[in-house]
Image (tube, rainbow, N blue to C red):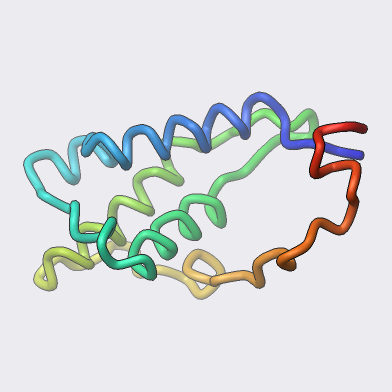
Length: 116
């Protein structure tokens, strides 16, 4: 069974940390209060989706563009909290796609316990 590599895990963890502590997207979001996205689940969902959709890895699973993915998510957050902000370049449909989530039950019962 394949798992996300350390690089992807680290990128997701870092993005979540910066998002939660108000430092994501520096300098684009510096001084901007975007805490409203934590009270509006679909807004947080979209920011996470953009980050994940833009993130690229190489053949060995190393993240290649964590800053670019963060910047695109930050641009979306900025446009969400500041309607006058224009995202440049505009988002492409694949960047903002909300992919189907996994089912409510694990497909592999051993994966739920962390066993391989």
